[in-house]
Structures are given as structure tokens and as C-alpha cells.
Length: 467
Image (cartoon, rainbow, N blue to C red; front, side, top):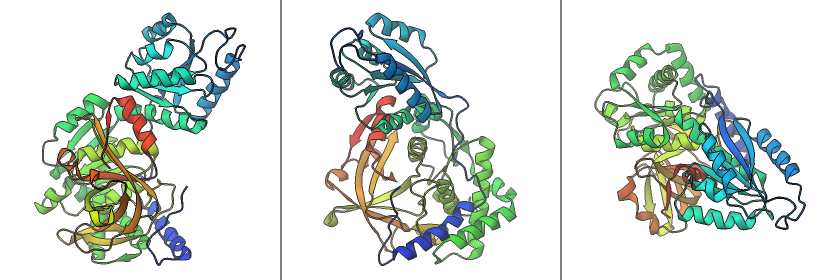
């Protein structure tokens, strides 16, 4: 776990004190749990490929393939308890075809190349089912390099791992688990509008359902919300914050009531993710309180709370939650070419950027910026850290992606409250995709490029590198 760093001139002692205070936020009465695990394990066909041991080839003649298979199977089962591995060996084209013909209920294929050369990996890849190629280094390397490159060139649903770190295989397997969990997930869309085409694409491509909840339903839930629980939530936020700037205690309690209302709806629908058309509903007098503090709490607790009924960003946040266990910061970015920076700005951001078990960054309770009403948050996010920013579009079948290093928490009264400045490699290239993708992006802490690429490959999505 990387140490969180925030704006100067805070000392290490001040920062640790802030973390201790923010830890109170984790005790806030709510779901306070990760999204529910799927009822069934992810089932992967574990295909070991090699030629007979008596033949001279890599790794070497007489190699103990059976011992290596037992070792790898045991390590995979220990490291991936949510996955059921179904091991089998294939050396010929006929054996590979027979495996594919008999598999009707597996979620994907993990092809471990223990030796060279066989046609097995090519035949599995050409089934275009989600497939992970793994090179057992210095054993399957030649076949891995040739067949992986060929599969990617053909646009097949193939990802690859060629690494001495076994943890890289474990992380790649998380992509299969993510796809499995998305198939049984429901996203709540709190809006009076009709969900757009992206909602249908989510179900078609990933199996994820979008369920509409109207403004009347959220307000009814708000009226029924447990008043004592709302007070308790508000008190936890008040105790955890470094300072309150504009909102009154009464306004924060109203936010507590909206949090309880949203929490109750998520429980009712067994949903790990909610997005709400906050601006249209609030500006139209159809929402009793801003949901910002509640969304902040969901994201800290390992769930997904997203702004503005943005289904694409919500889906991105849910997929990345399953893949990495970390919350995303949805934002309206600003570009500063003079500093080679993109500034991610919004009135909701998580403080536990490394997940529910991680340290919490300091935050302030502010009003919502545009109309100076309600209660929201300004989070002082960690600095000098690698960040990964993306959007996943089931409709486009693409992932737009860039990375950078966090350098400043901007203190500027204009625009949204949380403003994280990140230095990027190519600021000019970063200005070229907004007409196709819209204004929102979702930012994560950490170098998550490889996990995102693996998920995209297994789902049949193309990566769009925007900066």
C-alpha cells in the first residue's frame, strides 16, 4: 500500500492525525460492505499445453510436466478462492477441439503453455471465448509470443501474461471474475428520464441490468428514511471532516436522510451501484437534498455511487470496483496546457482511494458548487501518485484511457469543489477525444493499465489511448 500524501505544508504527524479522524467515516451506519459476491464461482477451464516429454523441446527433454501442473493448479486454487479451476491437458488439435465441444458452462479459458509447439492455444483462441494465455517462462515462450500476437491481430478475446510474478496471473484471473459478477449485477438509475442506448448495450455486451427509479420513488424513500440513522450518518461526517465551510448541520442531516434513502433502495433492489440525476432533479425541485455525501460514503464503503445519472461512468466504476477493489473519482476535467495538466473536478470524490481498508485522505464539507446549496465534499487527494483515468463504453465497445501523476489539490472557488491536478505525457493528444466521449472521466489511484487492458481484451473491447 502506498502512503497517502496531501498538499503542503501538512506534516506527517498532521496527516496521520487526519487519517485517524477520517477513519470515523468508515464507521458511518450504512452498507459498509463490498458488493455481494456472485452466487456461483467463476468456472475456468485450465488448459495445460505441451508435447510429449520424451521429445526434445523447451523446457527440455524429460521435463516433469505432471509435477508442474499439480504445482500450478494448487497455487491457482489457493490464490483465487472465488474461481473453480477445471484442469485438463491437450497436446493435439483434436484434443483441443474435444475440450471446446464439451464445454458449455465455463466462463473462460486459462491456457498455460508448459512447452512448445502445439496447435492447442490457437484453436482455443479461435473459439473467440474469453481466453487468457500464460507463458510458463522458458517453457512456452515461443508459442506464447506467436499465438498471442496472432490472436490480438485478429481481434479475438485473448489476453496474455508473460511474467515471473505469479501475482500477475492472479490479477489477470480477476478479469474473468469481474465479467462473471457484471453478468449478475443491477445498476439503479434514479431519474425521470428514459435510460439511453448505453443501458441496452450494458445488458447485451456484459449482462448488467439497469433498473430505473423515479424521482417520486427516491423522495418516498427519503420521507421513510430512519431519522435516527440519518442523524448518526451526519454526525459521523461532521466528526470525520477537517472543516465545514458553508452547510449548516441541518443541511448535513438532510444529506444523511438522502443517504439512508439511497441505501434502502440499493438494499431493496440488491444493487451494488446507484447513479442519480442529481442536477435535474434538484434544480427542478424534485429532490429534497443533494446526494453528494451519500455517494461519497458508498464509494468509501466499497459500493458505487455516481453523479448525474451517468450510466457509462457508473458501469466503469462498477467494473473497476470488481477488478481492483478501488473506488473511482468521476469528474468534469479542465485542461491547463501551460502546466501540461488535466484537472479533475467534481463535488463528489472518495477519500479512501485505495479501497475500504485503506487510509482516508482529509476532506472538507462544502456546499454544492454551481448553485451554492446543499452539502458536498472537497477531498484533499494524495499527491505524487500514479493515476489511471478511463471510461468503458459497452455501446462503442471501446475503453478510452490515459494516465498521469497527481501533483496538486487546486484551491479555486470556481467550478466543482474537489480539483485534482495531474501531469500527463501528451496534453495535446489528451484534447482530442472529448467530442466522442463527452466530458466525464473516472480516475483511479495506481498504475492499472495492465488490468484494464486484460479486462478489455477478454470482453472484446478496443483500447483508445487518449494521452
